[in-house]
Amino acid sequence: MSKPERAWDPGNPDRLYILTSTSDGTGKEVRIDLVTLIVSRTEGDPGLQPEHCAIARMCDYPLSVAEISAYLTLPVSTVTVLLKDLLSRELVEARPPVPVATVPDTRLLEAVMHGLQNL
Amino acid sequence: MDYRISDSPAGPRREDILPATTAAAVKVVIVGGFGVGKTTLVGTVSEIRPLTTEETMTQAGVGVDDLAGIEQKIETTVAMDFGRISINEQLVLYLFGTPGQERFWFLWDGLFEGALGAVVLLDTRRLEVSYEVVDLLEERGVPFVVAVNSFPGAPVHPMPELRAAMDLPDEVPVFPCDARDRISCRDALMTLMRYLYTLANRSPEPR
Ligand SMILES: Nc1nc2c(ncn2[C@@H]2O[C@H](COP(=O)(O)OP(=O)(O)OP(=O)(O)O)[C@@H](O)[C@H]2O)c(=O)[nH]1
Ligand SMILES: [Mg+2]
Image 1 (cartoon, rainbow over the protein chains, first blue to last red):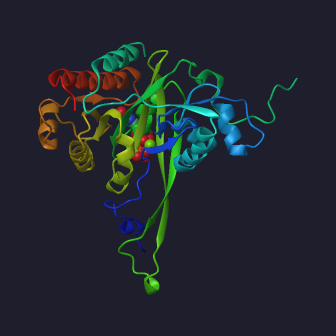
Image 2 (spheres, rainbow over the protein chains, first blue to last red):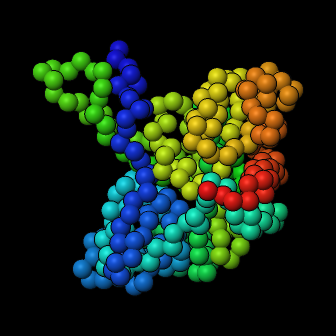
Image 3 (cartoon, protein in one colour):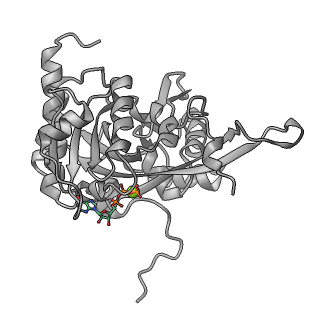
């Protein structure tokens, strides 16, 4: 039997979940990460494809790219492409993740600890 | 009367909706070998039913004997479980459980980009998987803590012995954890945050 595992080369992959940059309608650079939050700016648009509509509808409140991918059962890369369309048409807004330096900000850590305490 | 929505759109359940004020997210990655309890941990602390996101990847085959040198494409779907914890009205934390097996390492670059840190779930029955995980995290400069899952019949090692066996620096927290227990998982995340806090205070000028 052949072993497909052997055919993988972990050293030279097509990387997944890589940060993809796109620009929204205002020309501002927007990073699309697994945890970028997406919020709709519209109820819908007649020119939209069903997948676009589905995203616009489910994002009436903030939703991460990972959640959108899970609810639509679409791969993250596909969702990213759909989001780029929506962003360039200003139909959704992207809220980028908190930037994390090599060492995270202590105020951010305090907030997270406080939140966990209430769990 | 039938209240069922016929054309029920995909999306979060009402109770899973984030407040409109949520401004940004942070992420933590749970890594460990096959069957170590990653999904269990994510599910134990998540406020939403854990979700699965996946990615299809196509890659040119290497080392495959093919006819006439035609490039082979290999397609595989890689799935990741994740959950969510709302920290406050502005901030939300996502937890991603990712396999530590070598052939999934390619996944890690974007996943760890911007992550606060990682919890390594250690299975004392298969320490060797975790060696690789720990090496990789150190190489990438991702701060991590080590949570030791205890399975029935698994060898029991005192924490100092495990630390020595894993060749972990003294500063890296190593502690027992039960992935099925909410408080235990909460404490594991808390330990990671405290550890990050000491790192942050030690180097006042982050890169
Ligand atoms: N005793 C004990 N059992 C656990 C613990 N965590 C998980 N289990 C059990 O171990 C089994 C595997 O747990 P999962 O959470 O599916 O492990 P996983 O790491 O997500 O596994 P894969 O995704 O298949 O790699 C399940 O039957 C769990 O109930 C633990 O802390 N203690
Ligand atoms: Mg799992």
